[in-house]
Image (cartoon, rainbow, N blue to C red; front, side, top):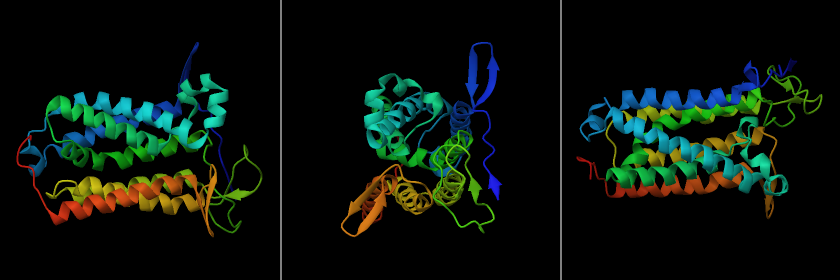
Length: 270
């Protein structure tokens, strides 16, 4: 049976300065965004709408702010409000881990709206542009969770070849759920969405496809993760992550229906 390696969360330590693996994973996420965005602006249907390298660099600042502030506030408000309100200084210790994707998602949407207004672009076009670059960034975040030994999985059958004991939890075999989510919600979703977005699509289609697929993928992989808390809806019990994914699924369906009911291919910066 596998045992979680429990690596040191500090990657580099120089005197009082400590650089955490979790922070490095976020740095990798932002770097891959820039790399993929530069590839994306060379795609013919994107290039003719006027996207530039300068746009990417300017947008990144707003995106980083949305991810960090939204992700942390989402963790505080959606998952552990009692703990953080009792220990308010812990809210600022983001290097310890604890970032909500759903909060980060809302934060990025908001900041992209601010950036779109600044650049006089349609915010829906901005969402369509950034959507394919999000899943790999999410995957890096989940790798950071795994290194920190966070988000342990539910108890698994001991015969499962990759069942893993998490020494910081107990001696029971568990699903390595952060790796599941990095693979399915991250890498697999990236492949599908990147291929989908390589061709010109109606406005909102790419953003809607991301919202739908991520919501479905997250709803599925949450079955293997120990829930932060569970919600009982009659005879149905779902985790907090699944509950927060339902609005994304509904939003994705609505956006796709509107996109393909009245297709509009943006031909300018408007």
